[in-house]
Length: 222
Image (cartoon, rainbow, N blue to C red; front, top):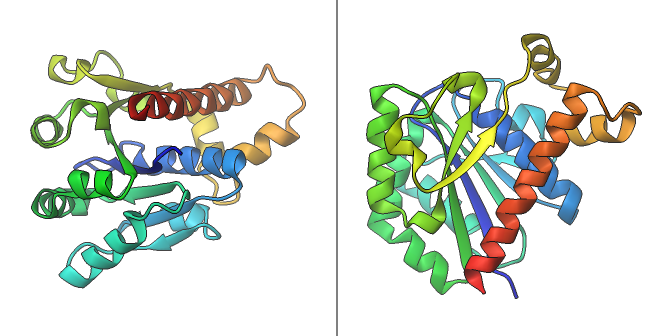
């Protein structure tokens, strides 16, 4: 039996497309599996809770109670995929906690497979954060996300090694369209008859890329 996946989407920087990625991944898992548990650790709106209120709950990692409550919900082998949209304000505190409690070892013991999706940027804060994660997270558990809308060019050399997930850029007018709180990626795929539209192909490409992440995880655990 495959380990229960936990996808932690993170960045020490705001406005890098982290919540967009969490929305996409959550909708893909909901479509594929019929259910998913999403956790919103954010201060600023709109957040994941605003877009997917039926599958999302808020979480906090500022105090010990909040940290333990989140871990109790996440590090459990119940077959239900989890997605954590980790706000930039909580980045340092969250990974300090994971190091202190030995999250990866505890997850392995409980048959849970954390996947850290780090959304890249070209600034010094992102560079230092990525370096910290490389020292803390095994290569197989760390995925660098190249959001082409944010990076707009080559990734910093230090971020190019290891596992990569490329999030293609969308034109500005389409980004405005998908930013509406009522928009659903899966709903669009089902309703749009013209499969050649840029948004249809973009969404399908990302869903297929998520499927590849799942297959890689299964291969790693086998």
